[in-house]
Image (cartoon, rainbow, N blue to C red; front, side, top):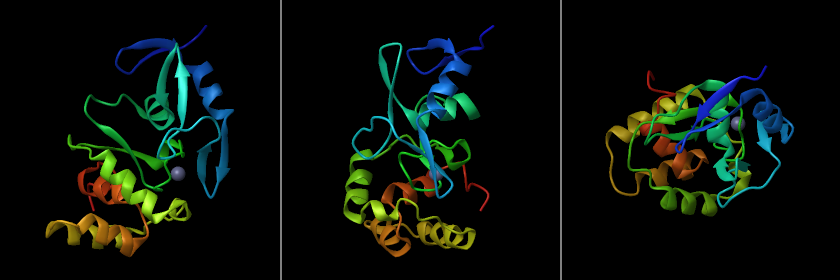
Length: 165
Ligand SMILES: [Zn+2]
């Protein structure tokens, strides 16, 4: 017997166990991250073809291991490592205006060496405090200061993961 799940829009019904196995066969554990070894798209996010459609592996992983991603929400990485698909490194951000392009530019500038940089709780607290007094260019300043991507700063501002901090 197979376990069928519905994922994404348009909805695809598929064998969740087979898809989990497929995902897990293409990762490598590096510094605690499950780093996708298959095809990647711009920005380092993994790509996977399911029933003829291309999906982002971090989103697939979230749907498979954590739960449904409501429409309009996007998946962020606490580890700031785009090819990582480890479910407990993923969280949702609730804000609609996901300025992907800008975030990608920020990452490109700061380089891949920071992908494994992780933030401590006190750093997240400090970032949240700083974000309360938002001004133009603040994401960039904080990204440089903490050696993470602008996208992660954005995710901390609008995300669910550190919502209680
Ligand atoms: Zn990770």
